Length: 125
Picture: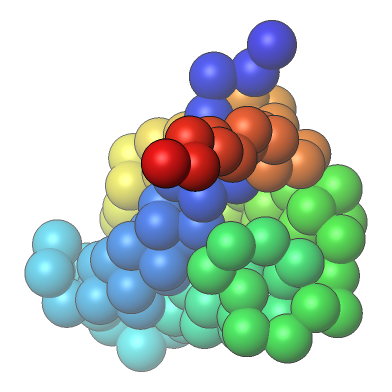
């Protein structure tokens, strides 16, 4: 069984999305090029498709959890490869690589459906 619940994954989605948007300025690598805009765009995308995912922290049910996890893997691959794809690896690469790999691993370790909970019935007096 995969250890990360869909609800925990939802919290991670919003946290990582916000951190990706702010990372260029927080980690002081914002130069206005791809090194800056790739994480900003991917962070914004993560928040948007999280809002549209059929899980506990989604608002509108457009994407299944499987589709959401697929998007996470694709975004993680793009983020991890972006320093070399867009030619800024000589300037900055570690944040993009590490967060991209973490995003892939989290997606692979997340359940595709919420756990079923058993409702307890209170005894009638």
